Image (cartoon, rainbow, N blue to C red; front, side, top):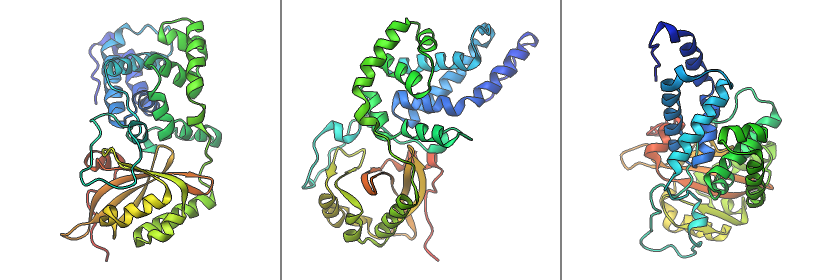
Length: 330
């Protein structure tokens, strides 16, 4: 999006705002994603933030930094978008697990599930390992889903203070409330989130080897081996279907039963929500492989704890830079 300079009098401010808008695009996308639980909604929110900032730049008087000013606009955009909407969640929060797969699968209501986002769009560039670790944890699917359960202004306060490390006084100024109100909101919000934000280490060699074995087993469709790589109480969810499975044995039965059409799939690596992820391509009757799902894995204590297979590939694959078709193996 371009931002033409409208007059000689505003050229200095215009250039500064335009530069800063792009400088902060990645962190604003991360902020809006945590607020909204959807990568696509986050994109819309950032674009609206850019537009409002451009339109209001002549009124920007420099009493706060451009960064704080942009966050204030982004917060108001997110609060506007959240007004009257149903909250997003993971399928596990929207209904019970199933063991026997029904003949007709129910669909989740549109916009009701937390959708993934590519790491490259939200994680900081050039961050030290500790900062990068915290950034990854703050976009985990479980943490983002837990955020959605908070009232919108509590959510904003917690993201600003606990994720972005803003002082309470600055968060209060941005939210146009008192420091006492921010501290009260934080206390209530923190009481909801600890279990959802259990720390998980970055993938070390053992975890990378586990993921490689998972990919190998899945592509060979060796389900007996794949099941041994899962926690006994592992979860497999498949938005937009309401269906989700709990238990390694249940997942194995599904993959050998209704899910057997995944046999012969190829996995293309990417990363999402601070976790390993893959574009899954199923065999195409006309040759090669066609998109089927975006798989996001959660690895805990040396095994795969969760498989989130997002099936809305028409929107997700372009957002992740994944090809829309794989040619036949040569």
